[in-house]
Image (cartoon, rainbow, N blue to C red; front, side, top):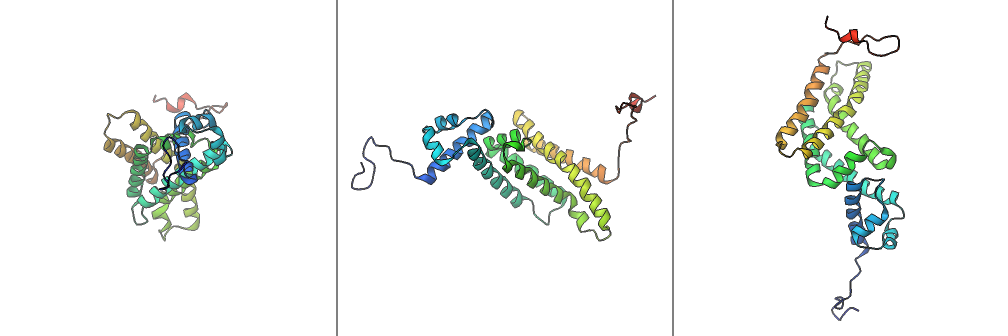
Length: 237
């Protein structure tokens, strides 16, 4: 029973306001999903970690799917806002890539559970539409960086610009995949200076793109009748 001042009586646990409780449950669920993964996390795990009953958890989220959707929606909103703030329209493509790399390293450092959830589930969009949306937004951001100068080039015909768009979208998964892989590698090798890891990620992406933009290509391999690469294609003799 509360006393005259409105404080809870000694020994009585005050009920947490609905909004604060929901925020707490989302924070705890993020930790559980980040550590266990979607498929191994059960509502019992979240309730136990939050020190609440399953019944109370279900009052806020009617299923594990709904809980995961809310967790990932918050991640997508946060990471997208960080990327939008970091990558400016007037930046060069290289500066934009450098800014995106920095954001991902910051995010992995500031929000390790959220980053782990993203890296574990980004290629498994069947567990939620929200992460598919994140993958699409990352793809659009990278494609914009790749095409920034091309889109403002008055000498390019519509057909040439369309061809550049197709090539850019083929490269996009390689770009954000390599960035995320470098961040994950750095987290497992903390003896490597972060600045060096960031620079390696930028160089890997930028120098590879630069060689492609310059027209450098590998010769197409010879193929045997079964459709496999012929060993003669790489035989130096």
